[in-house]
Structures are given as C-alpha cells and as structure tokens.
Image (cartoon, rainbow, N blue to C red; front, side, top):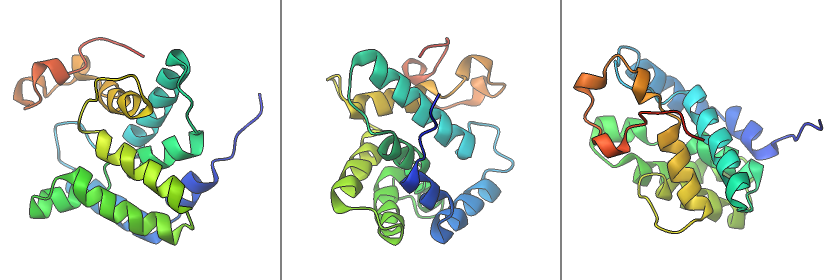
Length: 163
C-alpha cells in the first residue's frame, strides 16, 4: 500500500495557532463527562468521511477532508467563552490558520464549506453531507457513560455502529 502524505493537514498539525487553540480546548474539556473535541475525534471524522465518500462514489480530496476535520471544531473555545457558534468562529479561525499554512484560496473555500456544513445536515448526497454524517458517526453514544445527562437530541445520537 502506498502512503499518501497529507501536506496541508500536516502543516495544520504544526501550526502555532492550531496548537494553541487545541491545547486550550483540551484544558477546557479536561473534566468534561461528554464527548471531547480532541485530535482522535478529528481523525475519526476524516476517516469516516473518506469511507462514506468511497461508499457513495463521491470524489473527495483526502488532504482537504483531513484539513477540514482537523479544523472543524477549532472554534469551540469561542463558543465556550463568548457564545459564538463554533462553526462560525471556526470558519474565521480556520481562514487564518489556512492562510498561515499557505493553503490556496480554492482549497480554503472547500475546507470552510465543510466546517460550516458539519452542523447542518444537507438532504443531498454530497461531500458536505458525508462530512456531517462522519462528525455524528464518530461518536460512540451507545457506550457513553454520560448518556443520561447528554443534551443531544435522540435522533442525533449514534446508538449503533455505522460506517
């Protein structure tokens, strides 16, 4: 098997702003009993999105999907501290990080569209819909010890294993 190097995703991982925001988020969520928004969640979203795209015959650039997955919850601290929805704050923060990483404008637009779409289901079979589903399916609600206290709507919970 040939390894595919994800150039942009790896630049994001090493970006100072990204690392600062992820460190702040990790510290903020340290005692959280609910799902956390850590690197494992981000990588799960990317992997599941890629699988869903392959299953549905949707063309997807791996570097774009992984970059979007790494950045899709980057606005969480703004949501926690200022009440700004994280997909909105995340788009702005992602734009700065992507610019710092030398991401071309067209790819930035695609990544920002995925970040915005991860909170709103789209009815059509598309990359955005697969990204939304991947975000939801990356959670193991069926095994969560905090199920009773969770405020997620029942229809959004992942109560069985799905790809």
